[in-house]
Image (cartoon, rainbow, N blue to C red; front, side):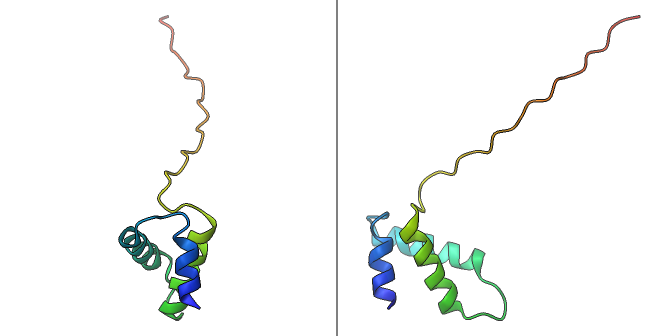
Length: 73
């Protein structure tokens, strides 16, 4: 049932209004054509149950490449 999914997602988000806003944004981004919107919303709530949706994402580590310097002739 969806109420179980909502209560599971509330373990990471304490504010129901914030959960609604985050879930609607995520549902819009993850929705695929020719699928039910309800299934996408349920999938988002399942993902929110496993992770904290409001936590900042870790920036990927970018490897710095050595810069070539030109020398005067």
